[in-house]
Image (cartoon, rainbow, N blue to C red; front, side, top):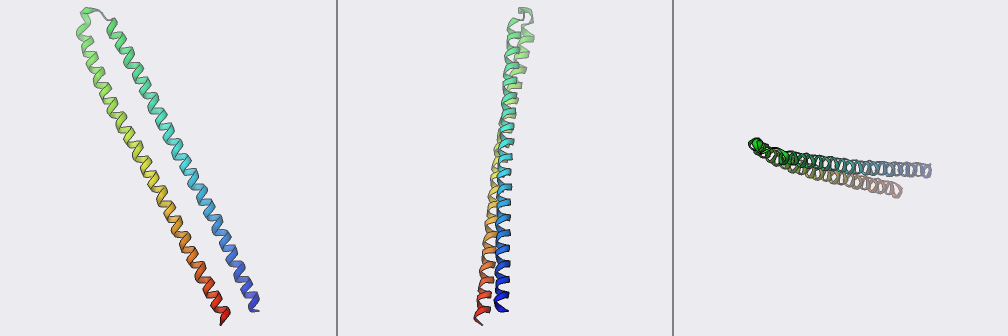
Length: 145
C-alpha cells in the first residue's frame, strides 16, 4: 500500500517535472520569437529610415540642379530656396538623429525586458527546484518514519 502511494507520488512528480520542462521550452520559444520579431522590426525601421534619407538626398540634389539652372534675374528666389533647403536638411538630420535615438532606446528597452523575462524564468525555475527538493525531503521523511 505504501509502495503504491510512493509510486503514485513519484509518478506525479515526474509528470509535473515533464510539464515544467515543456513550459520552459514553450517560454524559450516565445522569447526567441520575440527576439526575432524585435530584430525584424528594427531592420525594417532602419531600412525605412535609410530609404527616406536616400529619397531626401535625391530630392535635395534635384532641387540644387533646378536652382543652378535658373536664370540670373531669379537669383534672389534661388538663394531663398537654398536657405529653405538647408533648413529642411537640418530639420531632417535632427529628425533622423531623434529617430535613431528612439530606435536605440527601444532596442535597449527590449533587451531589458528580455533580461527581466530571463530573470523571471530563472527565479521560477529555482523556486520550482526548491519545491521539488522540499517535496522529496518530505517524501523521504515519510518513508523513514
